Amino acid sequence: MSARIALRDITLFERHVAFVRPFRFGAVTVSAAPQAFVRVELEVEGKGVFVGASAELMVPKWFDKRPHLAIDDTVNELRQSLAIASDLYRAQSGFISAFGLHAACMGDQMTACAELDIPPLAASFGPAEIDKAVLDALLRGLNLNFFDGMSANVAGLTARLAPDLGADDIATFLASRHRLERVALRHTVGLDDAIEGEGGVADPRENSGARYFKLKMNGDPAADAARLTRIGNALTTLPYDYQVTLDANEQYADLNALTALVDRLDNDSALAPIASKLLYIEQPMPRDITRESPLGNLSSRNFIIDEADDSWDAFPAAKALGYRGISSKSCKGFYKSIANATRAAAWSAQGVDHFITGEDLTCQAGLGVQQDLALGALIGVTHAERNGHHYVDGFGTALAEEAEAFLNAHPDLYRRDGDIIRLSIHDGDLLTGSLTSAGFASGAHPDWSALAPLQLASSDSSQTKVLQES
Image (cartoon, rainbow, N blue to C red; front, side, top):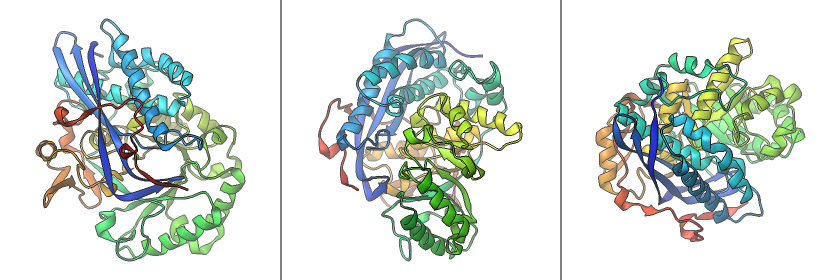
């Protein structure tokens, strides 16, 4: 049974996060970005007032890739999304369920952002972050962990925004869920990352013993095939079996280019180390072209959408086009991820396998990685892309005391490496046992006094440093 809550306050912060190596995906190479933090004060009916928190990296040129926009414009869209959502959520009066709060605000959020030319994917960022913080406070007020709380559906999640589902489908799905004790790490290989030798994809000091690999592509079938051949040759030197996924980040121009890539995967023996281990291909074409392009014969392969997942009806629409899967990212909204997992289970039960995956864009050590990891462990994501630990040095610019607090609260998820506290990986897996403290998967909160207020309309290039657009 859902609990009733009343939002009392929202405060928005950010922190500059520097990368230890550049990360190139799509058309952008990023070396730093701001991380957003949300703090809410929430009254849980009959229990009192509790504080909840969330965090997410504001990555440039992913939520909105339109070429006419400057780098900082795309980050400022995310700041605006947060600010608009904060005003809308605060305007709600009286007691309501946590999901009811989300559902009451989403329509106005989309409208207000559209008037500012903020696209739906970026518009969803603000509610996604506030919803996580609200749930954190709610669970603390009820003294429940994320898994028990969601199994009991204390947030009151319904099919209100997913009318293709039955009235009780989501609650029934949640009631059937059990925490995965381990989630395998999927190691990201960015477009500028080393392939062979020391520091390459088979170097255990770089891949952390991962058995799953996510390989970025640039949209040129010939160039991608040549690079994948090199990666495949390197992966065959691993002393254990592996599997791969491919991610084009919208770089394939159309179905013709995508067909050329698939033809190479099907027929080029040099690509066998990749093709024979391939699980799925992620978001090959631009989101607008995706919506207009049925996959046809290509649908015999597993394709998923990610950037095209910008609305509650995106998965049913993609399914009609021949897509089999969709990514779960807490930066796109964890309620929607749960609805999509419910859909995937229902469709699979009808005889054609559909699935939901775990993709990491914005998850840094602390709240970000923990809340996204818990979400995946709830909905059955057995392996998830985790690139935050690879591109950021531990907790980055967070105070040492903050990192220590997270280590003490989650000793199975972090480890001490000299003076740095970083993610702890166990035979290629992340452990979820310590994510069962009261709240949304976190026994610690950020040091709020060390965070800066969210910088609306900031054009400070030091906050979002991009080496190049290519």
